[in-house]
Length: 336
Image (cartoon, rainbow, N blue to C red; front, side):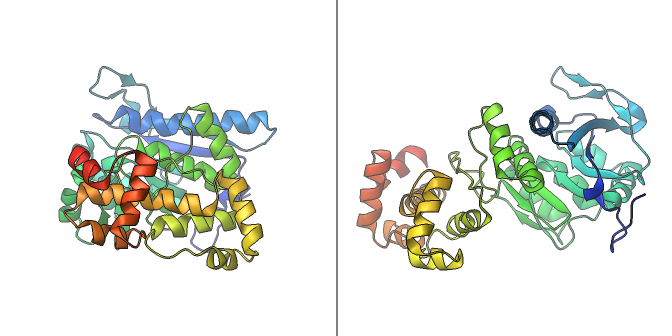
């Protein structure tokens, strides 16, 4: 017998099988479904190999159990929508060209709204954020969606704080949203990491030949940069601080103090966990931030250098030539 927690949901942590319910509808984006599904399925295989009793159970559902036409020559077989009161660990709302018709289906939106109250977690992929917003799950929350849909989402749902750049964001303790298509894979890996730790998430990424998951704060417009995730929480926290504000000093003794370590011990552990010393990691993050600024803005070199933590345009130029083999000016002319 499960005991209700203080918000009325069942204590999901007691369950050995985590049900992931994927909502299908005509015109769904096929990769929004299959990408996260492969992540959760691969995680289940790895968990079984490790002797864990916990597993993910994927179920694709649709209204009346109708087959789902994706519009790209693929058709998915689906189960009928379950009772919204049924216990679900994760409710996944994919996007696609058909999402705007789905948003206007009052019966479907009411089902999402009710099912979300029983789910431990709700995930939207791409413009699946429209379904979450229509159901009231994003009111007053920050949310990610495909960059091409960001303005429309903000206009239709003015209470939603739309982030047009992030790959994925944790909109609340209960709801996650992600950008277009492949960002759903990054989000699914982040969810697996939260449930079972960094080591399993990295194993799944390697098995799917993804190398490492991309941080949620990475821009949709940036060239993909896969940052290795540390296993230890304190090192991951340091990574997130560096990635969130690359322009800050990020001195070694400050990072070490936050991690309750000596600078020497912190540097050694950070290198073991990420594969490079803190100074190299910081420089790589700053270089990526400068690359984005060069292609997305008209800011001058001194402004970009200062904002991204290089101090001077000469330092920025030397770093670009050493790391990328080209000057910042040449990079901007080539990729802007």
